Length: 428
Image (tube, rainbow, N blue to C red; front, side):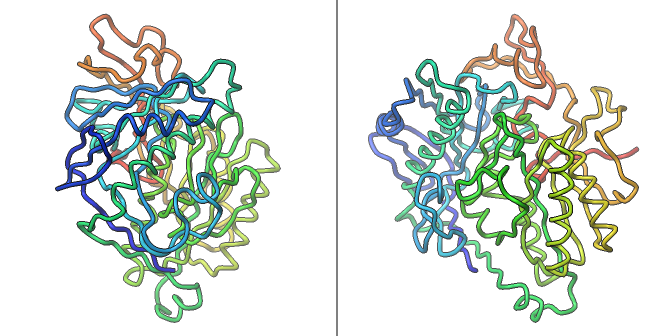
């Protein structure tokens, strides 16, 4: 399967009467975008704004971040199974407005939504302080049930990304990246002496606004499933959860999964990248045992010599992570874990809710409990008082001068367990 990602580098963003890209500047038809989104009768009102890197702008409460894209060759337009018919994606060519993002904001759905600061201390902790953001603040009609509320906002963000992404359809990309991976037997024949490495990606699928979707299917209903890495890079996986903002894998991060990109970079050189296993996270012991055993079975069937496992969330999913690790190591498959830590504000508490002697190779993506002080913003998109009810925030977290205090828990992408940021922890 071969996928070309044509990156159109975005250097600035502005509003205009139509949506297009010229000389790296993305112009967005604000009125047209709002009218398009309000075709959904569940949406009462939409406010669209811009937040640029370096501006003293705070965005809160953030629900999701999506990269604007358009399919120009091949199947799988839009977000297959969600905004378009279910067709195979992961091949052909997709044009990306690289450096731009759609950020959805709105009334609180679940307490685990987050904040993005575009400047200063807060900007250090989120990768989305570096993107040119079109914020879509959505007010739904009164009386919507919470899951319907979440779905309305989720679909609005995806539709906004599609609307804006059309601007790149006829534009010549600044660079074209090619991701090509054949079948397991084909790649093993090419690289017989390289270790076969699988990526096991755990997904929040615990219900109650903790969901991930693959081709529009709620992943809490599936067994661990093998996917071609190109599918995730090409819009097959979207976020539909309100898990803690720091380690929620946003749709943008699925589209640019850094573990997949790093494995591709080493494919044929240091290792033979043989695919991705998508693993749902469950709350019951029977569910955890089932997915752990099934994951190990698939890894053995695919002949894996090594596996990288990334978690989403912390606490309850720590048990899944360590259970999978133990069973893989018992099967003589070398295992590396990627996880963040909930180690208390002083960093001295037990970092994970579970442990296993077999977990000897663990990459930390940071401590979710670390407290940051964010200076007053000149402009706030959304509602700063919502920090009082967000995970990582508290009542009184916003001081009289607008200074905000919170744990990294509340900062979108701060400790993402696929490594899409610059934070880690080390032992002194």
